[in-house]
Image 1 (cartoon, helix red, strand yellow):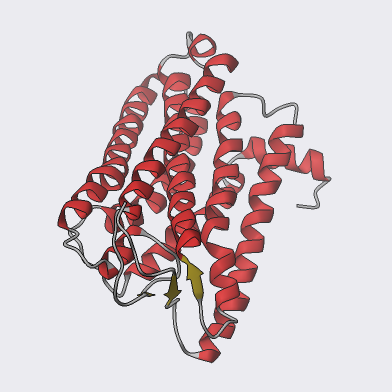
Image 2 (cartoon, one colour):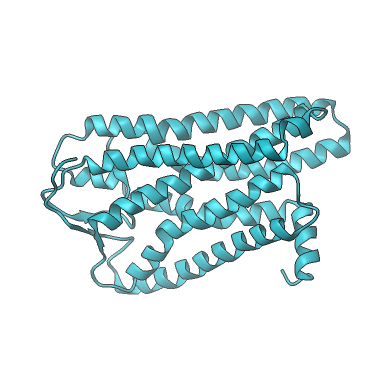
Length: 303
């Protein structure tokens, strides 16, 4: 690891305009609370409901958990910084944030893949479904997703720790990530950027392609199903696919390109760090009758 003379960074945030910062505080505080409530409701409903015991809901529980944590890695700091004049983040806090963002972001990606695999097994291999997706296997798959996320985020933090900082310390972003940090490093970051693209970029691209192929295979196999079965499967798969597109689109834009930062980067990052964790519970509940019915039973129509 290189020696670095910088012990703290200043996050530029979304804007320096005091009026806009007040609006950012209010809007993102509401969005963050809604994200936590939405994902918490899904987690509690799945744990307490008798009807949501299938592997799909087992994975949805972990997706909601990862979403709540993923949002927590960036939103609280963005909200608090909107009220402070100098948005200071220490070097150690910055590195911790890089690790946490990539850990829970990768967990989201891997759980979405597990959910697609579950739908593939349910629709394309219905007779062997209970054997393929047994409780034991589902548990192992989630443990592997945790391990995979840890490996990915460890690789990211290894790259971040190798960046030497000896000049400016203003990060033109609202959270610490490798792209804005590389702009401040006093060394040629070409190789490190290649490694970022081959790590984060490859995970985003490969995962998206795998998910795309799996849904094409699922749609192709639906032609043999009854009209009712086809309608139910299409409804579930559409929910999954909407989540996949709104999550992977921004990720691919940010992590699969040469070392450059654009003004739109912050808006794109907002979409997948704050927007997606908020939209996921809405998409899965509004488009899923089983979850809606379970919530009505548990919460007595209050939700």
